[in-house]
Length: 399
Ligand code: ATP
Ligand code: MG
Image (cartoon, rainbow, N blue to C red; front, side):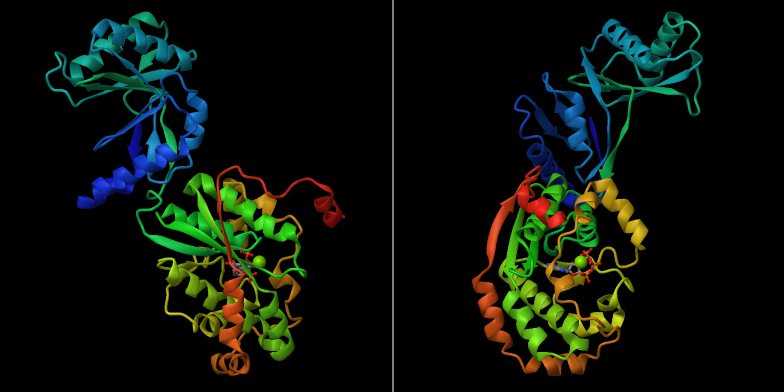
């Protein structure tokens, strides 16, 4: 039994939210063929029909829009059946000295017992059946929830926190600039959490960056897929632009001009693909290119919103999330990405917008971008897919 998160406050959009959550849950659980998912107005019911409950619950914890859920048992609308199941469920968790309470809700008002009568009846029965157990109203050790519905009575003794947030896809579509680093996958997770459907854009510069650096970005995408469903991955060849910038732009502005190119291309792709915003993993003050001055000088190339979900987080806070969502270990694997390799020794921390515009105006911007766009490749990445293989290549690079 799944309880919805913030949905309940969304007024007339409620139906759309519930439908989308139902769709997302079915997607995540697509490989459990016997499941039946019913997304009703105030609860979602997932009938297991013999599928493995712990595997199903592990997946559910990664679906945004769920406040919490409870493994439940459905019994006939028969008091004896409820009594038996209630005792069995309490016994499952009971240890000597524990306290309990029964919490009944009734959506079917035709049932012969009301909530108080049901609480009393079950409470009394459990007290008589399990020696030593006591009733406690405030913060008992065990709570048995009973829901009386038209189609049966549902009992649950456990409530598991969901991922919170809003169902992915209810807040429009955006594009995440994903590198191989720690920050951008976390930014992606946070965007997904607020219901944004994401596509990934990644810039790579062969032969300066290896196939493994590209694969790393893909595998990070696969790590985010459990929260998102399938994710489109857009790879953009960036070698020519980086070589040109390195050759023709003063060292202090290399980084700024490179970033302007990245953002320009991301914005063009976003426009073409109906993405409403660009997300990145910038955190204020973390490195030279992530000062406010720098953001002014880079952001200049687009009017699309550039959203930075980790802008105010400290590095250790970002790492904590990366560990929680399972991207950290992959992110710290040592494959050079295009920015590390072309990083100037001393990038300006306070680049000036007019300077950036001036240096850039000396380059054949449109032609460079056109050629990069011609080399774009789009693939679709699913959860669990592996791209980094433990082959000789990988080890050679790690050594
Ligand atoms: P991250 O850990 O996400 O790599 P970072 O702290 O290393 O971030 P930068 O390298 O300055 O920071 O990158 C800032 C942001 O620019 C990244 O978070 C990412 O959104 C974007 N970015 C950097 N490199 C790439 C790339 N090769 N492809 C796509 N986006 C990139
Ligand atoms: Mg980086």
